Amino acid sequence: MGGTNMESLRLQGKHRKYGAAGLSVLMFNLMIVSEKLPDVIEYDWTGRSSGSYPGGPEKAINDKVILELNGLIDKYAPNLKKKLQEDKELDKMIKTDSGKYYVFPMIRNPSGLVFRGPIIRKDWLDELQLPVPETIDDWEKTLIAFRDKKGAKAPLSVTYVNGNFEIRDAFIGAYHTSNNFYLDDSGKVKYGPVDPQYKDFLTLFRKWYAEGLFDKDFALTDGKVLDTKMLGGQTGATVSLLSGGMGKWMDAMKSKDPKYNLVGSPYPTLKKGEKPFTGQRDFKYNPGPSKAVSATTKNPELAVRWLDYAYSTKGSLLFNFGVEGESYVMKDGKPAYTDQIVKNDKYSLQQMVAQFTKPNGPYEADERRNWNTFPQQDEAVKIWSNTDAAKHTIPAFLTPTAEESKELGKIINDVSNYKEEMFAKFIMGKEPLENYGKYVEQIKKLGIDRAVVIYQNSLDRYNKR
Image (cartoon, rainbow, N blue to C red; front, side, top):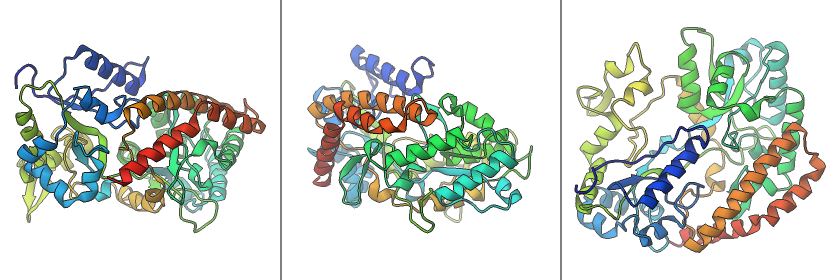
């Protein structure tokens, strides 16, 4: 392909000044301004995240940054075309409101939609003769026992990265609200942090913080710090990832402490037996690791044919399992990882698989692919899946108009900065909860009601696609 090499651009910054996400956005913006674009670009174009293209994919097409793919898919991408014809839900997800395709999508398999939730030390529970907690009251009793009988300095801890409290909606959902935008029971867009019941969540965590049940250093806890706390006995519960959290920690401790045991815990509720209002549940289309074709590519036909290979039978095996005979073999018509992958003395299953495949990218994840190395992980997915998240989660691929996106970007930036600042102050006792009303008023002054309207309009247009 002339001009630039055929390459996948997945921008990942590591500079501490900006954080991973911040530097990624900076690098992306510099690339766009330079007009020196690779042939394909892996990025979130949807207009939902702070790092997405201003105006979303429609604007990116109009700005001649990426190509509209309708004609190209029709002519040169038979494998993706077939999938879109067979899956109308997916077809609806990966195009704009005007019907323009803009990416070759990452497609999650059904078992890969849930991968994060509450995690707790089961060996501690067994030692203390405590059940896995289900309600907020259960959790409080458990955390008190962790503090008093196990000497945990931070019984419950979560990461706090780039100003984001990564508890997501665990505990918050018990009060039938969210830490972000969500859908209420009637399907209308709401912003959780201004709900009256959000104050109840803040009251709970303020109490837990004061009593040493929630990490006193939560504002300083990144991934590495949480690793230290979970592996060193300072923390007995968190909210984290299936592989990058639970699997990683259990793998690290299996030879050091055979009794070390983690399990997934249900998303907490106020009443026993109540189905959690929400939780982590993603959609089959994942915008971030999907690829668009640059408008400057000299050979779009070749780029599209290359990308389409991932959705073929052979391409799917390559992207999901690697090289036949090296990383996998076929047994009874099904792919199975070789001993080199599953019985490696030096590296974990995930580390070995990463040498042969790309964990996320523009292809369809195979249902037969499973990177869980402990049965506790499989069970955790079942537990975390038992929520009403599908009903209350806003799609991550809505496409506001260019005008809406520009307006929304400023509102979200201002609101998020203020919300996170006040969140920490409320939890740490630096701001009286009596001022919650003033906090809500300020967020409204920053334009949150307008943001809700924009998301609602975007959702309404999406539903009409």
